[in-house]
Image (cartoon, rainbow, N blue to C red):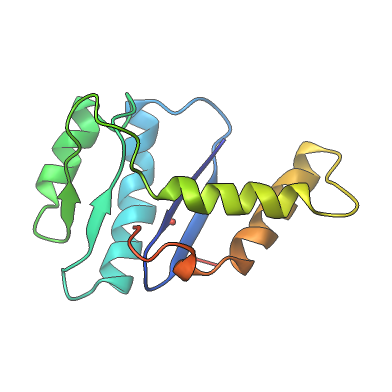
Length: 135
């Protein structure tokens, strides 16, 4: 599993998750990866973070952290049970398509991670103009 962040200005890091994402694990990602990305790429404070209502994203610890950092960037709140409009899906589809077209295909988890990182760095933020995961 991977976590990523991107915006119309730049691609952010692709983070390898060794285990299932929980609220506490998600909280360990936010300060180091999301906050630094938003503060660099959207230093004007106009960046808006979008995420879905996955359990770790909606956890009390993550919600509290996002509220505490609301002066650094805005957080787009999804209505519960909203339709799937998360534009990161377009980027992930492009990433998956690029990985599937690799020849030879990755054969081990290590190879897959290497290919994912390589292809991630080749993606461009203009795949979708409105999304908010660096090479």
